[in-house]
Image 1 (cartoon, one colour):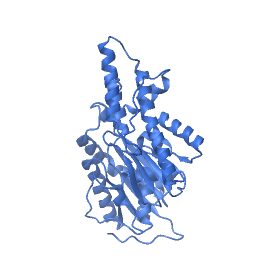
Image 2 (tube, rainbow, N blue to C red; image 1 turned 45 degrees about the vertical axis):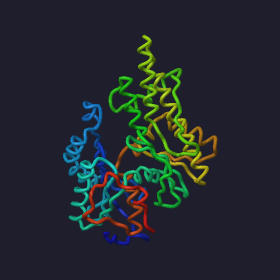
Image 3 (cartoon, one colour; image 1 turned 90 degrees about the vertical axis):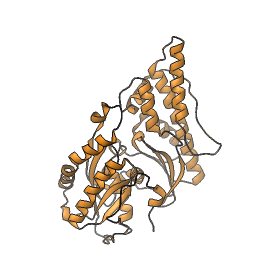
Image 4 (cartoon, rainbow, N blue to C red; image 1 turned 90 degrees about the horizontal axis):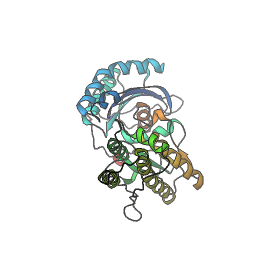
Length: 350
């Protein structure tokens, strides 16, 4: 492990962070784990829209095209000289292996050139600690992570100590939204379109809620997705047409009810002081509204980062990397991209 220079005390830390886990290239400079000095994001949505989803090889190539310029611009916009950076952080996993490699090579190169420590960072830890960019976290706390590739409930007994208590057994929420959107004729990415249509519907097509075993905090969305397709196909066989917005509303209500109920139950069971909403699907208006209303009713504190910190971004990676920085925990320069990196194993050691 790299020995990190002890910057605790009156000195501030400045972490440059790189995020290239999927189809956004992002570079940020974060001060003391919570103050964002710069956060640049280059989205590939328009490129992948033509394919109806993310093409890994294309994503990697696009990262290569912009990463060097973005590193320069992020440092310039931060107002910090490169030599005054404390450490270089980078998403090590999970994610697309080719995309991760681009960021890791760039971060290693910069760290070596500047003589700075390297901090390999967990992508989901980043999503969780995006909330610290807007509010101090109170422990123990519970995180509901909802994104294109992840649907998880994570308990944090203390700072940087992650315990996974529930996860999806098949599709993640974001994946399910995209598949349902495709069935409804919406372009990629489909989640925002389904969310919008659901808000415009005056009624909902009834769809099942998937609770799994009693007491389980796991999730399953493949059956719900199949129920949507069955409803559309059966209507077509009868010569009927289901209103797309009503289908969208029925699907969203079925997803949101399960997410909200399990998250609130987990908060109660584990004695959490806050509920954190994390990940790209945290931008979903239906989910945000339902959680806000339920948490007010239950007297729970809900923390949701602003939209720019919900989707993949490097500022959240800088916030999570600060957990390692202040404890002197670094990453060897021979570290590799790890698409299966364990969140619990990434927890801080002290």
